[in-house]
Each structure stands twice: as C-alpha cells, then as structure tokens.
Image (tube, rainbow, N blue to C red):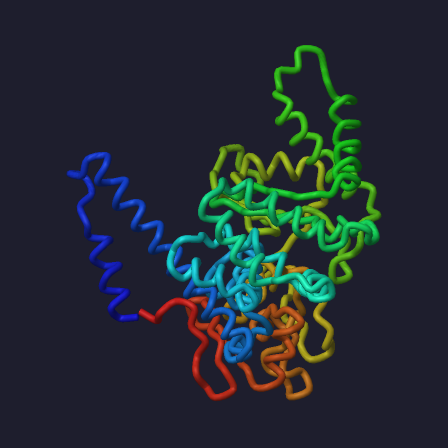
Length: 399
C-alpha cells in the first residue's frame, strides 16, 4: 500500500498542462484502467471484510454501514460494492477481467444479478453452464456498449424462468436523495410501472389544478412544485406516521434577534435535516407555523429536569437533536427520528436528565454503549467513540 500511495502522490504532482490531445487521451485511458483495477481490489477487500465480520470491530453491523460512515459512500454505492463482491465469487472470468482493468465497477454491478441467490438456484436446476455465461458476460462487457450489457443480463434472467409467476417488480423500487452544501437536494428514483403510474397521477392532478394564465414555468418546474405541494398536503392533513412520538413537521431553528430583524441575514436559520437558510426565508416559513421558544441556558427554558424524570421530555429532546443532529457514534449518520436520547451517566446510577448528560444514539449504537462501547463529547463539542478495549474509532486521522 505504501508503494501505491507513492505512485498516487506522483500522479497528483504530474503536470498535464503541456500535454497535447493524444497524450492526454493515452494518459486518461491508463488512468481509467488503473481505477478499474483499484475498484476490483476494494471490492475484494470489502467481501473479505464482510465474511470476517470486520465492521463489528468499529461497532457497526454490516460492511454497507461501515462504507456509508467511514468511506462516506451513499447507501446505493455501498450496497453495489457489497453485492458485487458476493457475485464475483461465482463469476471468476468477470472477476479476472475486473482485476485486469478490462471491466468497470459499473459493469460488474450490472452483471451481479446473474449470481444472486434465486438466479443461481434456477441456473443449477436447469443445468446451465454458469462458466459459459460468465465468459459470455466478459465478452459483451468488453466489446459492446454499456446499455447492451444490461439488455443481455435482462434476457438471461428472463430465460431462466420464462413460465414462472409474474415477478414482484416493487422490489426494484429505489429512492435516493443527495443533500448539497446549500441545503438543496437532488434525488433519483426508480419505480415499477404501477408505482410510476400512481406517482404521475398524483403529480399531474396538482400540475393541472395550478396552471394560472401566463404560467412561464417549464414542465420540470411544474412537476417539482407539484411534488412539494404533495408533501405540504400530506403534512397539513396530519395522517402521516409519528416519528418518536412526534407528528412529522418542518423544524426550523432561528435566534429571536434574527427572527425579528427585517434584514436578510444569510445562514441565520437551520432546518431539522441540517439545511441552512437566511433569516428572510425563515421568516417566510414561520409566517404559517407554530413558534416554540427554546432557551439553552439557565435563564430560560429549564433543560435540566433533574432526577425526578427518567424519560426525556419533548423540549429536551428538541435541544439534543439541535445539538447532535444525528447519531453521534463514529461512522453513523442515522437521522434524529431513528435515535434515542441516551443518558451518558445512567439514570439508575445518578445521572441527570439534562442536555449535558445526553447523547443522541440510534437503536443499534444505544445498545452498543450499554455493552462496552463509549461516546464522549470533547470541550470543543466534537464527539469521540471508543471500543470496549479503550481504542478510539477514527474516521479521519487525528491531527
């Protein structure tokens, strides 16, 4: 690994400005091939880590969870690596081509379903030569367009069970949301035909009901506005499931001075999911909202409720959520509504139900800290996590 790091350092220092087009393309081709080989190695390491239960060493249950927290991968990306690692154990030809840099990680992810449990069982029952299929996939991957590879995989899977029952296409539904630095989000979803029809019908009803004369919005803008309106309607109706005994709602935190100040004040307010808004935008939201006062000191709302109450009251939970934002266990980013408020010094041992004695932990990591793991908050507000043997779980190297 030391030699690899040295090579990467050399590449990072490479001056590309003096290269002509053909030189750049040649360098790019070699770099892409090298990336494929590195992706293959990472996939293999992740698979071995999964078989060895390595994630448990850092208090996490699975390798996808470890990759999400420690490698900062999206859930979709983490899942792809793990599934690919499992599949490659049954596809030696694809694995070899991947390791040689001839096949990409994305292509491997497309091929992966042919080595899933049900597909392997069906292939074995029909005496399918999986080795032949394996080699055929390499040929298609290295000679055909990416879309063609997906078509071949789909046809192979259909051929395994042509007369079987209609598959449950809802299992393929996916929705991923990526949050950007300014709090805006970008999303992607994959729906089956029936699910897609339902979503389109709901959005279209709102689009067609709100088309004022002179509307200059594009079709994409109209549908985006309809999606937000759909969420508005559901939240206002009040029939959504409760989150930790709290009715789902938009949470916005802003200082009282900024709330009454007529100026814009960028970055003055924060939403429950971590977006930052200007004071002007926060006042716009608060125009049709319930305003609750939360004072985080001894002169206002009493955040320390002493020893009389073991269960954390709602106002204290809101304060802990504002401070911690998500599960504080290293490598975990579970949102607030998945989390419990943990007494750092157990209530039964004299711990107070207070902000200072509280930590936000998801159910799994709440259990972990009751079985030897430990979370501590530093004077600068940062949280650190320690294993039962006293060693610290580090995501970033300690400077």
